Image 1 (cartoon, one colour):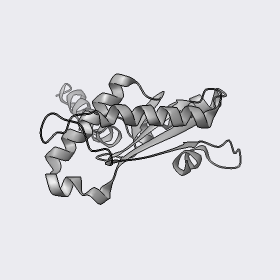
Image 2 (cartoon, rainbow, N blue to C red):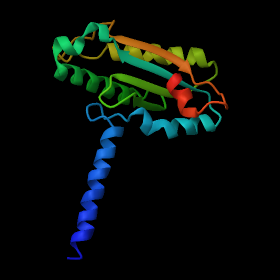
Image 3 (cartoon, one colour):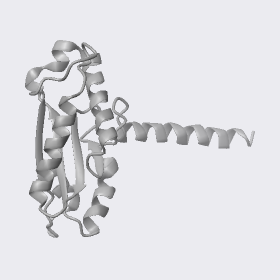
Image 4 (cartoon, rainbow, N blue to C red):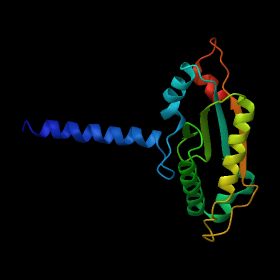
Length: 168
């Protein structure tokens, strides 16, 4: 009987761990979500670096998922995530949320922050647009499916760090 309790505790802890992990890491892309990386971003910030964020999203006005189906859309997101990991854009990469299609690239800014972030954004879009179309298995993606932006996370001791990140 004494062995049942530790075994039950193990399975209870494992179930809880899996539940929490599923809220922090996206199964389709393998990328962490923003809440999972906030402490890493904070460390960059606290170590004196200017931290910028490059935003990449898929234009919802194109209705890619509705027209092509969720399998197509999941394949598209998985391919984007693979390309991002292969090219190592940003110091920290995360999805804004689970099952999301907005990717955030946090990076230590070198010299001229605005120019550095713009070059990172341009280079990232170039690589991603060269991706294959999940529907045909070849070809390139349409040029206009991506929305992008960039921002420098401001240093403001009056505001909570998490709010500064989400507002950037």
